[in-house]
Amino acid sequence: MAALTCFKAGERSRLIYRPRIRGDHRGFAWQDYRDLLVRAHLQLDGPDVVVWANLNVHRCSRLRQYAAEHNWLAIVQAVRSGMGHIRRRSHLIDGYLAEPGLSLDATTQRRSQ
Image (cartoon, rainbow, N blue to C red; front, top):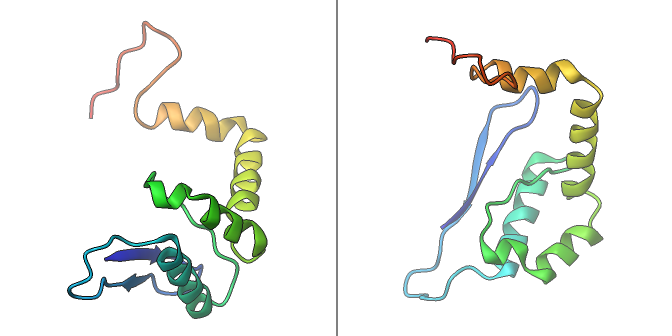
């Protein structure tokens, strides 16, 4: 089974999945993941940001090419935009260290929980 957890502001979260057909022993091909993305896009009715696991088929050149050819599949644009947002706000970067009790100062101890 392949699945996507989907979030859209102001709407309920969704789980969109595609089961493997019984008796089919092959794994999911890049086309199966493409079809799952299309299904999610149609249901969510908007640009989609996808965060892949590091599965080899997710890194397949044909799937990357498909994503590059469809502007509604906003992987690179969303990452660049989000990283730019963080880069311009040092308090966000500092918060990633402070919240788990990390510090750039080697003498600082982790805060007790």
